[in-house]
Length: 489
Image (cartoon, rainbow, N blue to C red; front, side):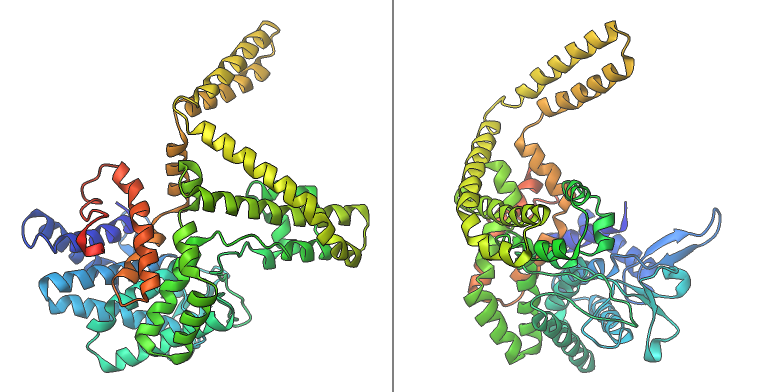
């Protein structure tokens, strides 16, 4: 069982212990708790253990995901304290929170909280491993983070806030969260910081962000995700191409990022009482940009596309994506044709008419195709295609074209696996790839602390859809709290 599974189970077990105070479940919770507290958090962050060589003792290896899973551990200890009132749970919470504060301090208190810290031996010699500053100079930290890590940090701090006994620690947590959240506010929901000349990997929580500002020769050369890699190979990098791509403006479809932004700002408002942050959350994120609606409408957009739900929003967003892609493609065609950039921009409104028409037609056809694929037995067409390929492979073998026949047979085999599937299973596959833990952490952080009523309603609207794939598994542990529980209303 890996570290992620252990921590996640610990959260669930202590949550379940609300209803079961003794017996096998409580015993399992206690064993997990002793294991993690005794073996996996020497300095307050949850880390991995691994052997250096066969027969040698285990050594700590600060994991790249230490902060998110430390946040999950804090949540588990909060639930433990609610059930048992054990002071040990509060000790564990405060130990972890101090580690967050130390991570912030060793990076220079710039509003940046890294992934992990430890000795150089533990962290290795990667480019993102940086010597700590000040009184922490004997340690190093990972000068890299992600919205995953910040989700764990903010969730943990939000749930733990009212249980912190140490006044000095409360002030340190408040100062850390205020600085980190002001960094996000000042950079329009992006994390930006320069540490010792190294610009760490940062994140951007804008729901319409699509890495438009990260088009460089280096990024263009190494992109390997389909279909971006095909696009990069077809169009060599140039400064003008980078400017064109930077103007890509898709509709707001990253509802998960909107949800995480709201978690972070709501948590910061509750902890710090900072008027600037409160005004930004209420006036900018909720009133003007309506991120709560973006989150509730698009946090599960990919699943909605496959499952045939929320179709009005799906159609609107797909059409918007096609229009945005069409505008960029038209500018690239102008580039290839030698049309000056200034003239291409001037002519852009003229091109919007055919682009909008083409986008509408593409959206209509895609919606029809998806509707067909949702019909019972529609995936049998893949079996028919497989039979056709197998017949062609048989013909090729009569001409001794063994390699070509083998390629067709391999394709036919893959098509037959599709034939036994459906869009629901495709949705499960994509959900597993993207990961659902971040969504649950954000929902937990929002629902377990005071929140604006619009934000809370958005979280409650997302929750039943988030629990559906878990319900599909028929796992009683994960279904311990049903989506329609009175506690969630």
